[in-house]
Length: 173
Image (cartoon, rainbow, N blue to C red; front, side):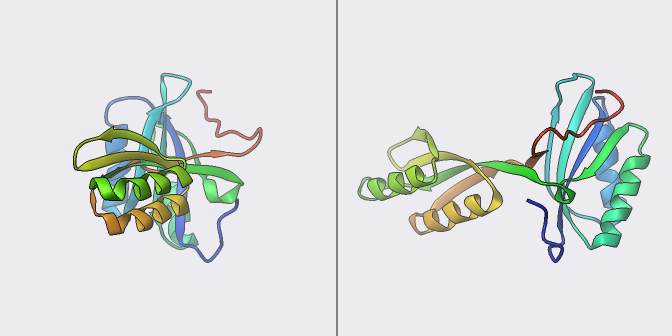
């Protein structure tokens, strides 16, 4: 769904050459200009010579335009796209380790089930669950599990694809 124009959070997808130092250049670009990266996810694409960087940052339209221009100027960049400009699917994954005494487990398992989470580890004192979804779903399950005592979380960066036939194509694919 297109991003709300009042929202200053932007998800940007970048296709880059899959080689040493490219991610460092992208991070340096943000650091040198005082822009923060709220979330970052990087992986190889169907073409092993191309990586896809999905990052989340904040700023008004002027800041976003500067970020896009600077990213596009990097020699290793093939394509830059603001995912908020088109209808897209965005997801992230979280692992949540919850304090889980035996008496609380039925309620914890019920919450996990409602959110279609998957239990990936159980110990005598804790349960670790994996949940995938949009940011709202991740926040909602965290809020419901908070009263039980969240021991630790590990969260991926956001990943995004445009809906339908449209793709993020660069020079290499």
